[in-house]
Image 1: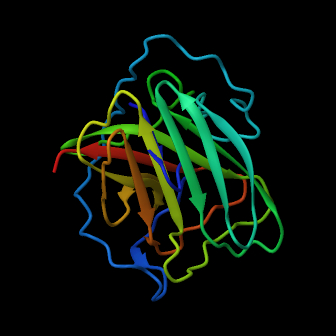
Image 2: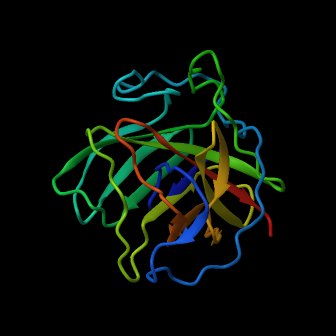
Length: 230
């Protein structure tokens, strides 16, 4: 994976059938067709030092060993700034939520180049975009005992990521997907729309989400950022 800035920037989701967030969604371009596949190689061969939150808790399921930040979400949402990790930085925001008090979250990232621990002896399921490269994975973990749901507000994205890759992004457009639970399994589902690369950065705004999308209690929501040449 490479260096990138994502405005919304690093979070995770659960998926069902794709559905607009009640009438507040902004127009989007048609989503690029995405498929499953391995993450892209990091520019540095050396393993990074382990981060303080690369344990369970605060993480659950697959443990990401990249950059990590504790944040607090309120009814107005919240933001995070994952500092440089193997040439990549990510800034992100989560829009308005139904949280009735400040809620603690952890946001972490990884490249899937040996920096994601197995869960129940299973490797992390890679995201494969058919004509592109997966740049980065992000997980958002709600630490409270209650699920947190996005609340639609006109003109305000429910998620925004700005990803910067100082080695250059692999393409001129990027998109984001979330790892959804479908029946007894999981599969990656792309969010509608794409974002244009500007220099070594891209900002991805998400105004639409799958029906039932939320941040469950103490269960990670995983995101993948992928770029390609359109």
